[in-house]
Length: 492
Image 1 (spheres, helix red, strand yellow):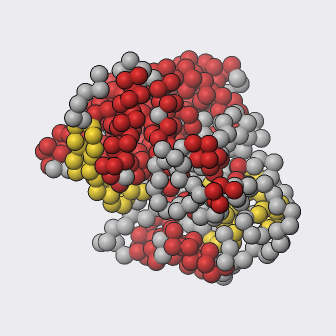
Image 2 (cartoon, rainbow, N blue to C red):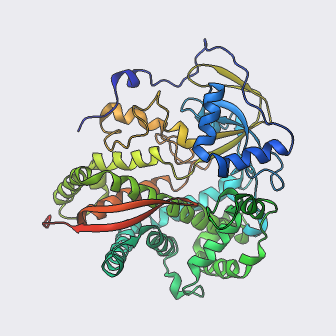
Image 3 (cartoon, rainbow, N blue to C red):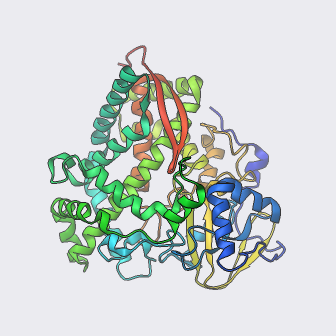
């Protein structure tokens, strides 16, 4: 299957600095103190919505770079003022550690650090901080030590997931994929990273609800619930007037901490050898496992199934033909080498990451005066100014991607398609670059890609096609599975 990018688009793929672009003052305004931030917040969450909020300002200023206030704003964020980047050329500056700092910039606000045992987790640290590289090293070590288990454990998890989906469809004519997938992801992470079933620990059946409560209290100021029975301004005040305290999650978190501490003795020994406190290392393992990994999986798997599902029977036939042929050539087994041969499957997963990245925002603080460029102009950013790269726009840049709002499963197939991978940023870095202890790219980048491909592979080894309905939730899309058509013939 040929790549879907046009030669005119491909010929323009150059995001190196252009010396002749005119210097332009960054447009936009923050409005009146306090009131400007409140106005932008209401428009962002209620009156316009995320994408329209950015779209209207991009059109108004005729620029992909401008000034805005970002939620949550008053009273829980000291500084809501940001410079937003909405194109693929300017966006990567938020990864350039020679120009920006990444300390405490997951959003414009931070929850109480009592949620993390009083420590600043690795995700909140700049690589220049003394414990950043040590924490990231133990995360790499944990993932590496369990890497040979991921495929078999995830296959078992997916088998349980598909069985549960089939059972729900048989009982009620539809299945809530998002809810079932979330449960699968939680148990998979325990089994794969900590070699235990959470139900066999003191968590019992409460583990997922404990983590959900812990996450929700941190993330509540950054979402809207969309409940029609609550007026918008009431919801806004409830979610964004004060930071939510840790105490509603405290007892459950202590149980979670005790379980992870006991299950991670070898990793915590390694942490001590690197000069970390066991306590700090354990809190970071929890953050990595359940904020980073579980949080990302609950957002991402519905997105992946949404776009593969909406591709319809034609795409499903192409994927199943490729997957089954490769698995047959590998002796009927799903192997790492076989996964690499599935070019359309790989491309389809990349395309889902591109069209709807699970993490929308990437923040950074300018550590010096610097100049950023979009396709048309240069802009000066002063030291200390907060920069926001809004990823759904950057990875849908029409000057890089042809028909960017269309899901093209073969977009990244072939030599020309592969050249586009450097504009896929879902992992807090370019897809063509690797996570290291010295950068902020996701340490689970390769594992995430492996599991995403494996989900598609196992799906089409078992089914010829499936039907879905897509809705919305406060975290992203919600997916309801309406039908699953079992494969007509065996592949071996």
